[in-house]
Image 1 (tube, helix red, strand yellow):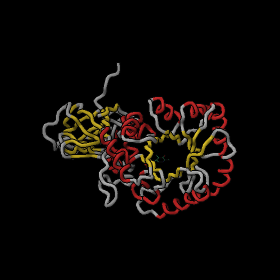
Image 2 (cartoon, protein in one colour):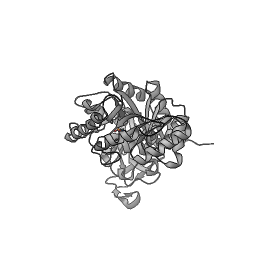
Image 3 (cartoon, helix red, strand yellow):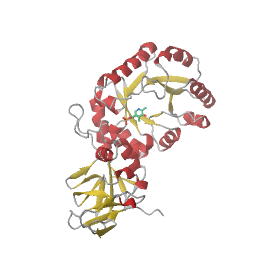
Image 4 (cartoon, protein in one colour):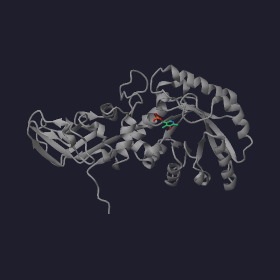
Length: 374
Ligand SMILES: *Cc1c(COP(=O)(O)O)cnc(C)c1O
């Protein structure tokens, strides 16, 4: 028997669906959208998220590792599943048996993949990954001609398209994005029209802020989960409005304790009460993804009001100052991410308290707590 915790991550499936449709509608008819569902859909649950996106019309899914792709396929996902880091040789045959679509970034992998495809008696579709300025994975655009010549000699493989990735697409109007896109254009020009390939450069940042680079496929992650890549939740000056955050995270107050002015709080006494203080102990800590860097910085919502976190966040607990909130008692709901009454705390705000981005907050909370789909 699994006992459930008071710490619950809620996943709003309607918001997932809404975000998918909203972005899809904003794209021209010739651009399709891949849903990036790696890292358990940024903490939202890969299988649930993929099913909701599929119901909204999505047929392209992206994951990082082969294990994720296999799990997604076995969950009943029917679409194309692109594997961005799928080259563990021990598991190559899964690419073939599960009809996965790898994104290839080395010549050796092309050869290995071809052998696996021949062994499995199938023709395997794949994409080539180009590094046009990220300095991460991929071939150089200058290699395109030689690569295409190589690809044409390999058995049982069919080239589906070309992919690159922007380093600064969250920065609206970054000049660097123009240069990266220009290098990607070299790849397209070299490949020519006859091959009828798919070209894809944009993550959420490119999709929202760099329409001239949409090509015929974009790859959205964070936007599908309701956040703008540059952190301006719901408040872009122009461009697509109305993305809805999908995740919230709540717990219940474990106990209320009163401490006298001058008393230190939690490990290291990094906070000392400057008045007689009511502390609400919450059963949430860094092992639940509530990062220790949020100590003395974060706020939570209790009885519709904001309560600051005092002292260090422990592994499984933290303390919120509820002195100014009337009538808080054990068992009351505390919202760490999301809305209660008229107050909202989103992942951008939490990220701003601990020098990180919404992505990391969503992964940390979503992947370390029980999820409930609503
Ligand atoms: C994660 C990822 C994306 C999605 O990025 P977002 O900024 O979350 O939209 C797109 N492409 C690749 C290759 C990725 O790894």
